[in-house]
Image (spheres, one colour):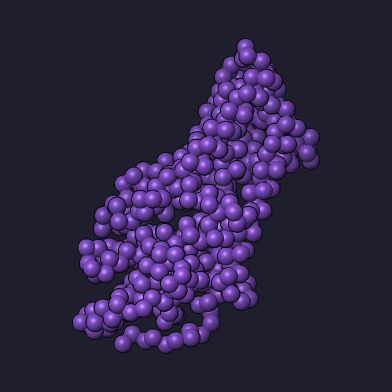
Length: 390
């Protein structure tokens, strides 16, 4: 580590130096490049996460480098609370906020179709309109199909409200579109990083780091910073609950599909059937995880957040919660006259979730996974520059 006075002199010089990013790049990219130059002089935080060792392999930061590092950042906030140049210092180094701003730029630039990248900038409105539209659709369909005098459905069979063929016709195209849009956008981003060939070891490491959320441990295992300087693993745990809850719900749908088409066992299923067990367990975890993420977002230190992205973040969390909570309520009340209404609410939330998935906060998991793979490949190569420790 360099002496503090030497670091300060070098940081001052870098803060006043020409930007690495092109002046034609968005202001968010230029500002992040300025901060990364200062961080590269200080390097106090190089053990906190993958961003800083990846940063020290570069002397300049082109737009592609900034986008790569922004998506490698998990936004844990530890570097902000450790930084001697953070606000109110005149350098105003705030890496978590700068990276959050750039990430939305990344999503918009690589979106497929490209014209729909603009949805990222109006995400709160898009989520609201999608949810209201999907709910209205299912409520109208339920009224038309089941009649205005709703009553208890025999055996809780929701196919008596919405036939199986109708639901497949509505959801299958939306699901395929979402997967295709996310896959193409992520591929565009990853190819732009010029990653080179990824070995099996690099792929395994990236997958492990993504599934364990390694870089939400603050670099020392005690966690990240949320409302203050205290370390906590709450964000890591809430993310795990939400992610694995979502995956269990998805697994429940896949197993139910096998039951229906392969084993000729259509829904509804009893409480001990595998699709039900997976779905209920996933729903509970997803409710807890999304509620935890909402609570953390409300309490988070103001300097961690980008105020313009509040609707972007909270809208997606709320939609996850609505999807899981409505599914659990539906499971409990499927034998009541409320089934058509509850089913309409749940299916509306699910349809809105998948309609907006490629253009919502869900995309951050895909881009972050691609950045982790790029880092796993990069760290196995010799560094182009030996910056040393001074």
